[in-house]
Image (tube, rainbow, N blue to C red; front, side, top):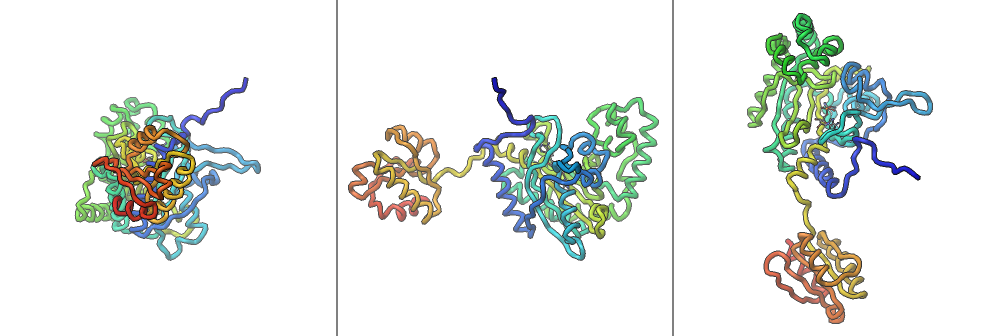
Length: 421
Ligand code: HAM
């Protein structure tokens, strides 16, 4: 007996009624980003493995245990991208786009991480990422956050997401803090959870993210990152907060945010919702001023963010945000009327840009009317044999009066234009 083959765990099949929310997020992003002068680029899904090891960081969860890595037929190590920033930075370097220029770019597409799947967390997930290269000032950070807010507004979710912000300083200040943190925690190793004990060796900063209450209690008494911030980073952060205040943008300074990727410095932020349970971060990002140079290019600062499209789509779906219903549901009775209704629907689409659903396949008038009601369309177009013979059609108001009027087929476009405008 042949075995059925199923989708891989953590990789979703998206039915039309879910996929449309993804489209909604992407359409809104595309339109908002162009208002701010960002341009879309296309990046490969597959990159060479060392790119992520070097840029995302050897000791991060992503590189340590979440990458889909394999040797291709030539024996070269390839990785399905777990995130987009590393690829974008490679792209910018490879094409010399960071040299005396600024770049405001965005990309969208699937990312892959071998995480434990649950609601809002998948092994293949969609991100929309935005990156700004060559601009070091806090005004850029602020504009990116304003752009996020504009997008939440366009999606109607601005009341359901909150901004959490932090500065993690520059490399030197972070190093001083890490030294102090390691010294402090080394004296209390026994009180640390197992993961944190391991991170003490590999990536101490990530201990701040620990979910263990005991570790968090220990951290409360320990050294604080903000005490080690270099003056430039502190000024940058203060200036950013001042712009956000002027723009009346609510935010919370959360000193615990360090982010799970190694490349950040100074500003880091997350947009969080309570609507999705544990996987509440719908967008995360920050500055990465050393990354372009680290890949061998000229030094150029960078800042950006990526949104989890699956999570945003889930938010929209949970609010059962409906797609726009059709303007007209078109019904026919009889063989020749069926062709006529198809042609009339074409006219309405092409001349008015109307959304028209034609009832395909035969069916009793009553059953077709039921479908028309369920479609949410305000108008039903009805063509039966007797109307056809008279060169006429019927239009029925499905929303208010239920009235039905017969008009000449040649006057249909004009009549519908008046009713749906
Ligand atoms: P990240 O925080 O790893 O950052 O991911 C950004 C967003 O992608 C998350 O906030 C979340 O919404 C979504 N996401 C991450 N993993 C999953 C998953 N397994 N399933 C569903 N959604 C997920 C980055 O990737 C950085 N490249 C962002 C960035 C751009 N920083 C600067 N520029």
